[in-house]
Image 1 (cartoon, chains in turn blue, cyan):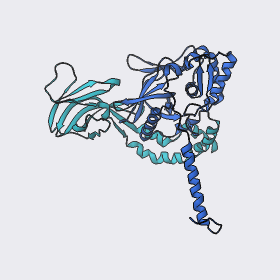
Image 2 (tube, rainbow over the protein chains, first blue to last red):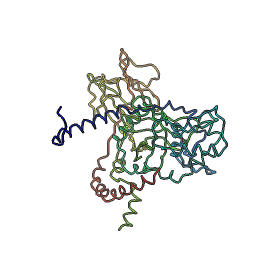
Image 3 (tube, rainbow over the protein chains, first blue to last red):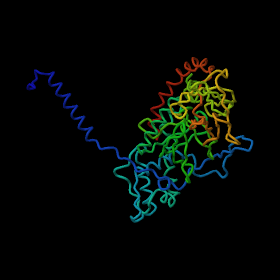
Image 4 (tube, rainbow over the protein chains, first blue to last red):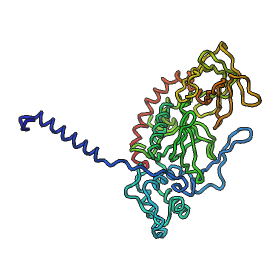
Amino acid sequence: MGRLTRRDPGAVGVATVVVLAAALAAACAARAPERRPRPFDFASDSFAFANETLLEFHVADDGSESWTERDPRPAFSLRCAPVTRAVRQFFLEARFAPDAPPLDDEGYRALVRAVLARSPRDRVPSADPVVIPGYPNLRSFSAAHEAMLKQEISSSWRIFFQRANWRLIFPFTPSNQEATAEALRRDVEKGRTPIVRVHRYPSFAMNHALLLYGVEDAPVGLRFRAYDPNDADAPVTFEYDRVARTFTFPKRVYFGGGPVKVYEMYSGPFY
Amino acid sequence: MAAALAAVLVATSGCVTGHLLDVGRRREYVASVREAWVDGDRLVIGYDARVTDDNGRTLGRTPRWIVVPLAGVTTPATLRPEPLRSWDRSGRPVAVWDGTGTPPAPPFLRVTPAEDGDLLLAYEEPADPATLYASALTQVWTTPWVYLLVPFTLAFDLVTTPPLVAMAPAVLVMGE
């Protein structure tokens, strides 16, 4: 290769491109591999309390369906998305240290605020987690500090303006749901814990948030296992039917069961 | 004018064309199997379909025919069932057995309940049975009348969707 001079602009350009390409390749090669989360464990990684529903769903003996308002009205309700978001934040952004000396209530409140202040869109465990002393996991911590946690989860007005809500107004075609199911399957198989909105918009018969942490093949589709913020006792499973190209959610105390639409939230800048 | 547009935006729940297509979408699930025929290397199944809307609400039942290649019965993920308008009942009739009492002489089609309310279809010859979940035969289609309305809803969306999109940055900035 000849010496580069000002009279050789073409060679300078080529050299610049080569240097930039080499730098880019080096940067890519140097990027640390994505930290894979440990498997989500429902019994220890979820809250000991649930988001309570305002309405209860009933199916009569003759098959007719109805809703009744709960009496008394539950104090902690309409929080499915922030509860689900908080569970993932504790899963990725916190580390429990049961042998460390415990803190007072205000000390724990400060730690909870620190966890909830982290980005809800993170997908991998934090390299610098918030350490919560005195408890082995979120389940035991939330059992001991239920009132404080509910207060902190509900404290921000922004929980009523979830960014991904804009997506509801556009169609969810069978092709879209097929792509969504496959993307969620890939994510869960990588150990990620995507948060999804499950809905029937424009009907409000169903409008819920779940955290997915397991997936397996079903006879004609996929079966997802999820943390349901409305149920502190057990996970929920729901299916994607590859032939009908729809998600199907089981009957719950707050839903009569049947087809639903699904999309991921708390993911990327637009969701 | 602006107030009217704002009122319409609040009332329409977004993309009207998309919601229209949702309203017109139909799914047909196998409710019960009436009869079965073997025609060469194909299994022809006559069944009653439960027709639902996009939200799973049952709209009625209707008789249907569908053809399944016998060779593909054991691989429902790749199965491509072919709906038929009708069937002239040519070929060899196959007994349909619900699993109770004495089984008929093979070959027969055993239809039994499976998990999650599905039906398990097993075509049993003297050789190993070939099984199939009835949900693999589900058909999805859209009622034709909605397409007549699409030009109008598209025109409506051309007016109402841009303001919704223009509001999106505010949602993203304010949104959690």
